[in-house]
Length: 222
Image 1 (spheres, rainbow, N blue to C red):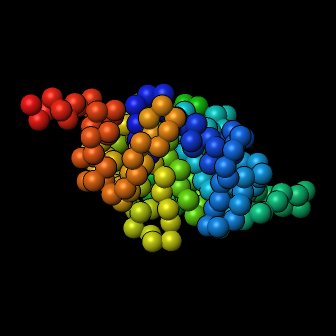
Image 2 (cartoon, helix red, strand yellow):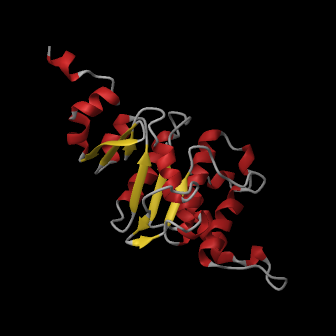
Image 3 (spheres, rainbow, N blue to C red):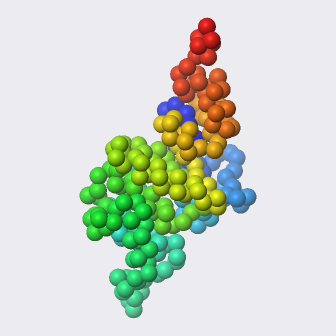
């Protein structure tokens, strides 16, 4: 998990990793491969998948089509005049299975733009699942979601985490979520690394308690 107060640089950090911003120094590597010079689409092909803080969907396409296109892109399946897309039953079936996992099967034919915010966030996670990245990047996945929708997203993240071949980078403000899901916490403050380590150790550190949680360790001791 990457945490820190507003303006700490968390989303900028994500933009640098995923390729939305060009790094002015340093490098980005994915499993040892230097991808610093690659644009965002090429980084996706190398295994980086990102869900944005604001939803990033095809608003005029149906829920099913959004997921189906992601599967098509991952498989490199093209369209031509001799191929009717609706006949690709295997791809459609895979997309429907993902919609079942994200609890949107009953809204498969609705335009993505018609979904409430919480369902749009679930659909974006579904698109991530469809492209099967090695690294899942979630930027505040529960932001703006209803109490009923949050457990669905968290269970999907838990499900991904159970796969040892996958890595999750999570930007999240809710410390209870961070404590539950994280094996490691990175704390940013004013654009700099403030702490990095196991959750219990990082949360207990004075710099985090003061900068992120608003607790003055000296005052607490007094």
